[in-house]
Image (cartoon, rainbow, N blue to C red; front, side, top):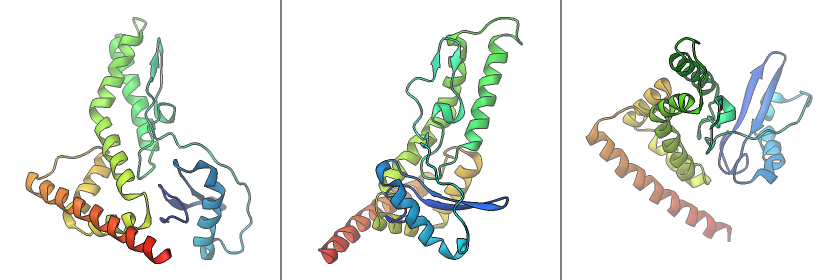
Length: 214
């Protein structure tokens, strides 16, 4: 679920689990309003949870900002501890497992299969490889979230933009491979033009909505 009622910068969800469902939402820009957004999400999905009983209500921080310092001596962070949850989608399970594996591979390599102790310089090999492979993905998703998750008109513009086949293909491939995949330069130029147009339209729609509500 998307909209200013369920989150000003993220989305709401309903995840079926064994014997119950998890209903939630997230926000970074208005943490004090999380209860309001949780209540609105329950209203949105009311037909799916009608007759249910609230078992537990809780909130946790979303670690979607890579930590400025992820290594200290012989200790290094991976997964949620390193802040590897992605913007826009909120995905973290794949990146938690992948970062753990890349870290372990670097330790095995630098310790020569456990013959030597590793130090901070050895652990930074994992961080350098991680940043080279995935940091662009985090930066692109951060930009997309700031541009298109900020209000309802911007979200509508994003939906309109995603009607394009090239956008769908690039989105699917990037999600499948968990990294920003290279595209066609001509199509990328058209996409950049269409993105600017979508941002301009969303700003115009927001101004009209403000004028109508005034």
